[in-house]
Amino acid sequence: MNPELLSVTNSIVAITTVISLLLMQSQAGKSALIFHPVSIKESHQWYRFLTSGFIHADMLHLLINMFVLWSFGNVIERYYYPAYLGEFTTVKYLMLYFGGIIVSSIPSYLRNQNNPQYAALGASGGVSAVVFAAIIFAPWQNLYLYGVIAIPQILAGIAYLAYSWYMDKKGGDNIGHMAHLTGALWGFTFTGLMNMGLFALFFQKTLAGPGSL
Image 1 (cartoon, rainbow, N blue to C red):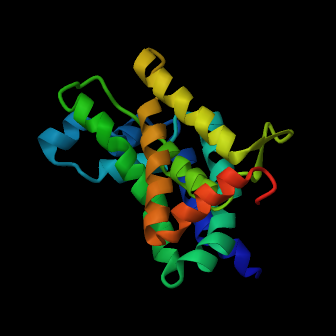
Image 2: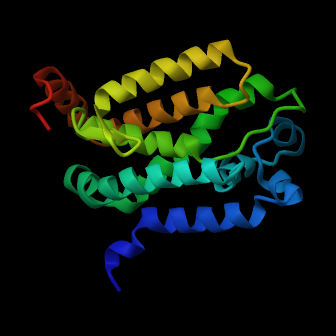
Image 3: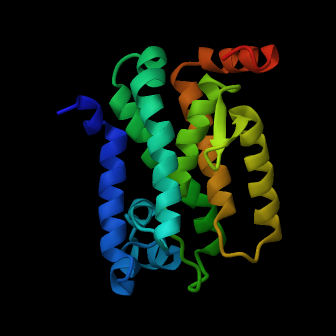
């Protein structure tokens, strides 16, 4: 068997997909795992910070998150982390992804710990962390919107942060935009702190322009 098929990223995608599909039509199953600040505060169900990343609202939500994770996660896991972060790269990658899921939920917890109507689910915080970890290594590498439109990662990242900030302030669409924003900042900062030279490399490449892939 091809060892690349057994990557950590592919394993996470497979496990998340299976759990999400099994529980997609089960309200009771979702309720047991969903991020619900009041349950966390009153019943100390801290596991919800993590388990909410294994369930998704619908097929589109699941497909987008898992496709983006598969696309960026395998690149980071195979090339960037081993080349720049030395030993224990698997542990660091797991901390990147699952840390993104947990950290991205903290602002929502602080805001809604007394709001019984608030609940959230999905791996978007972890996926955002992985995407922004990739940006620190190759800011001018193109990503492809809808698989066709080429956009440098640094420009897409800035637009994503600005959009998440704006939509969080605007509110009203029931999407955890602050979780996206917090997860992105976690991914960029956590990866940089694992090798402080990456911050300097990022700024050098960013200032050098698109030719510095």
